[in-house]
Amino acid sequence: MFCLKSSKQQKISTRLNRIEGQIRGINKMVEENRNCMEILNQISSTQAALKGVWVEVVRNHLNTCVKNGISSGKKFEDLADELILQLEKIK
Image (tube, rainbow, N blue to C red; front, side):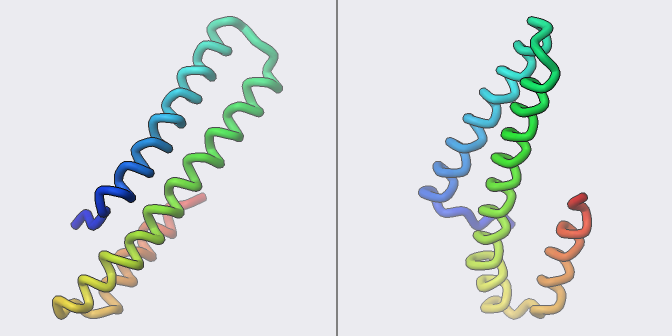
């Protein structure tokens, strides 16, 4: 089930495109044999940006998908377990 409204979808897509550009930039830095600390800094920035997208998708999931699921008769516990499985994957 994917419950993103078009405005949220566009916002997330824009952020992911920016992250994609950051990754291309990191790859270029590696190819140019740039300073490791500069590369690590860019990787950290990219990870933070990706985490921000992840949080936004989780927030949307709770505000729309879980609400819609409950309205359609699904048990909250089942919906919560589904999300908890994803949260456990974060390291």
